[in-house]
Length: 208
Image 1 (spheres, one colour):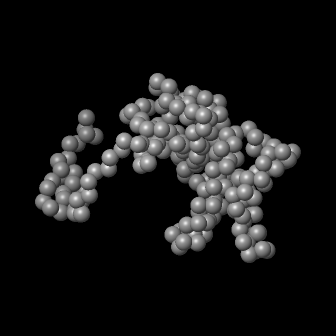
Image 2: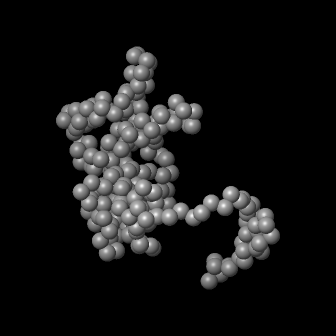
Image 3: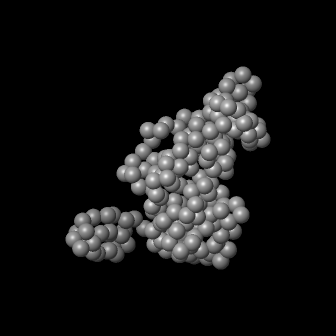
């Protein structure tokens, strides 16, 4: 089925903010840990890690005293971290991107992804229910269509929090293909000038 994405700004309280930052850190740790283990495995055995191996290793880490703190955050988000690493390696071997790099807490954007299981992600009025966070206030700028598959919670350097939802939309109908292209030149006097001669006026919204 076709997928459709939605992005909203969320307004977590102080406790929810702390848990989001904690989850970002834990997911970053898991990603970097398995990247290091992948590098070691490839150097020593000539092959990387698979999903089954990383799943067992993560379960073991949660039971060990020095990494038992991993149990404090959303377990699905931790699993998504090594799945993202696997996807990064797949794209690398296909020549689509560079070799995966370690993630830094200094990155301008921090994010983690979790999946919707047993309706743990849902819209309740002007609030959004998210795993471990509970209900979080959000700016509902549009209605959501279809079934929510997963959510990505982001924090950027400006101090704002966002959530991106990926939904499965059974009745979604894409626009018909025209097999035509057009060039767009953005300007000041005119907002945009198209290569076919059409112009889009500048409404000067910033003045209002």
